[in-house]
Length: 496
Image (cartoon, rainbow, N blue to C red; front, side):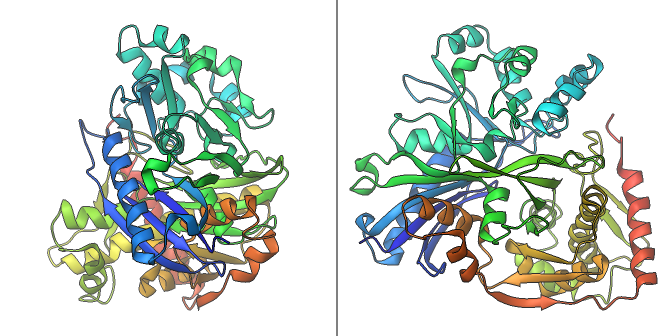
């Protein structure tokens, strides 16, 4: 009997693969970064071939490191950077253009036109999203508009579109399967989260042919099998979910009201709202968490576009650290942030502001400001932005947050996690397995093939690594947050 699950975690800056045991532990993993492409200010692209090559290489590498064969793998789960879009030729598999990344603001003007035409309420009511360049639909429209004759070819079924999960599924199956899951479809701005179908009215507004879109399935279920040439044998692909929904599943947030926050390139907080799609009045998104056995679980979500990516900027842009993990040492050279606030709005602001024209801003600089102060401010920006999301979420859910389950690379920074607990005034719980995005994909895939029998098995696997309790007095917490809000106001509308 197969003893392992393989998770493919295709992220914004790297591709990873992890082999998991039945206990939810990582037996082996592999990771490769790939280039970020910045054609113009605020615009971000990826080479689809780089995504594919790094993902395939890490999958093979993880299997090799685990000392197992592909026949010992019960199934593959895919999780992916969401909203990033690829268009490719059906006959050749060749991409039409670089993938347009979720961070890209290239379609901000399209969104402005949609709002001026009075379409915003229609999109929001049907999709649970706001009209913003973040989402996939306007990216597809942009590419169809960009290339003469492409829309006609798409109408004939010659051009296919998909988010990264769909593209990987196509490549893994040797071009046999063009599909996605409910969680990824719900992030496109053209999928009706209530009727669970590509919405004809929204497709017409954006002039996107239905023929180019994938079929939508449950997040846990059979999608297809890998081409036997890739791993020496066929492996069933039985789970797909967008990265943040997968992390929510991996954290065992199965009951309504449970909340997790992932600290990655961005920061994303999700609250399980059960079978009810809760409409937000505070700038949050209503999204599909996952679909299992035909039943949909909905979530409220808050999205921070730049979280850990701000640390990468200290490394690659400002060059005040050599490695991302050095930020903690640099911050330790100063006792605190020295009055410095950093709003990392490199590609605008997400929840709850939704300002595509905001730009990165550092305020409070003085002659005595050091790199240590800026490092503090960079780390703290993740915690402040998370509080922005929690404040909106508490207002929508009409309940106070009791605890926050945390995951992602930055959660290994104890100082940041303590500050997060302090600025929120609630406990932050860090699990033993912090790669919960990949774990969630493995769980979804494993449930489909009986590797795990039920969600109760998943819950049993969750184990606490450390609990961070708030120590800061309320007066100080509120004063710091008030100054953060002042800094955010100075970042808004800069490039408009």
